[in-house]
Image 1 (tube, helix red, strand yellow):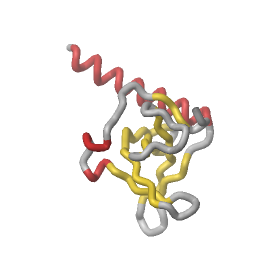
Image 2: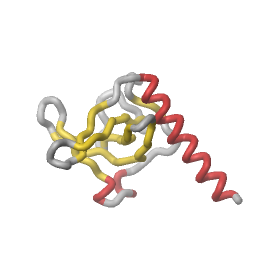
Image 3: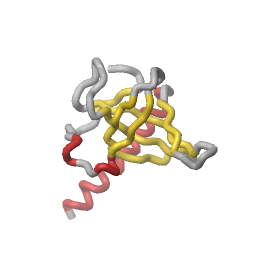
Image 4: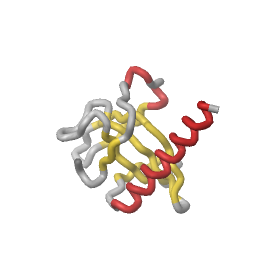
Length: 109
């Protein structure tokens, strides 16, 4: 597993998501890559998106996703930058798992 990838519990299918849950980003080579948005997480004053490619990248397992830092570009568009800092990636996934556990515990009550 690459540094910027983490496992998450549920396998997803892009067919389960509406079009507004798909984010299209450009790779460094200009290739368009579609991602399913798993979650948006606030962490230390920044906003991060957990995204999984619709067509998994080489070497990715079905239960892996990537973390992107999201900011506003000068034109008001969202700007996605892949996060490479392991501490931030771990914190984002820890918060995601905490929120997921909280939702599941509320559903059980």
